[in-house]
Amino acid sequence: MLSVAQARERILEGVFPLPAEVVALTDACGRVSAAPIMAGLFNPPADVSSMDGYAVRAADLSAGGVTLACIAEAPAGHPFTGTAGPGQCVRIFTGSVMPAGTDAVLIQENAQREGSSVHTTHTLAPGTYVRRKGQDFAAGQMLAPAGQRLSARDVGLAAAANNAWVQVARRPRVAIAATGDELLLPGSAIGAGQIANANTPMLAALLRAVGAEPVMLPVLRDDMADVATLERMIDGVDMLLTAGGASVGSHDLVRRGLEQVGLETDFWKIAMRPGRPLMSGHLGRLPFIGLPGNPVAAFVCSIVFVLPALRRMAGLAQAIEPPVQAILGCDVPENDQRMDHLRATLAHDAQGRLVATPFPVQDSAMLHVLAQSQALVLRAPHAPAARAGDACAVIRIDHVFA
Image 1 (cartoon, rainbow, N blue to C red):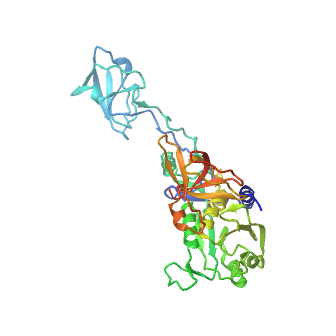
Image 2 (image 1 turned 135 degrees about the vertical axis):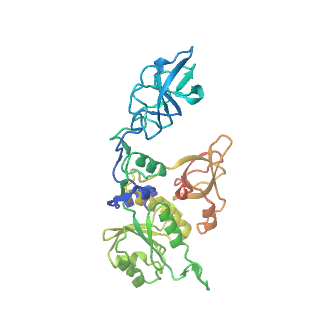
Image 3 (image 1 turned 45 degrees about the horizontal axis):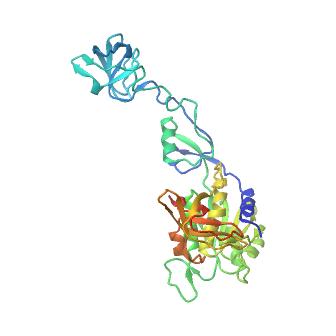
């Protein structure tokens, strides 16, 4: 069986960045930049005041006190077009352009004004309370590289740089089909031997959280002809996910059903818990991942394999997010030949260290445990038993929905 790392690399080799599209800046948050975002101007565009007060010539001020003549008022957006000479000042406010001839700002708390006269005993160095032109960024400067997921902060920065439109990668459209005669829509009357379909809504929610567009297909019955109908339902999508029918039972028909309509299977089964019966291949040019039917295993495999593939499709510079370091909050036994992904809670100890505590029961059918988990503790194949306080690597799953 392939290792988890080998399987993920094989999947990533078969997916490619999607074409770019141009969107309004107001719609760019959460999207991935497809081209660098450049500054169209200087910020600030000129030397400006960082405080309310008076624009002065620092050389005019003396410790013994001085009285200056206030010759104008220049609110933000209304620059003074003249020049301040020796012994003169201009009333300005936060964001006001510094008038010609001035080089510092005397804050209003340190000035006494009577009519057009301003008195102070304070001295200033040139540049005091002045924001220099381009202090934040310069025209032509790259503000965000291609391949970066844009945050609200990035949107604000791009707006300040006078960008109204940005190039982003198109959102991946992912078809999801759960399989099984026992599956019913949530909310249905559940009969003997039937269960509610948790996989489709769970996977759709996960895809939306990472910026993809889910396309939810009908449940496929345990019949190869029904599975083969998938070929007619996947026009215009960028990836196909199935959940269930991937194991070795006589009713696990996804691989055989799709191979009848052209699926080229790359691999099937990996050394992983939960999620050994994972499939990967291509249906024509369409990447295909066959997830296990167990919802916990389907979720874990989506975190480990589907999300990196979507990150590559979206053009993110880093397809695989590296695990973070933590310490164990309890003892764990030695591992067998499969890489384990233990559902765990996260907390911080008194020293500020991240503590991952696996749940005592790791049954892969326990969705309630998964819902309470914030992380997957990674246990390498044949890892020896570990004690509470030992170092461990974790994949944070709470951040997916942050």
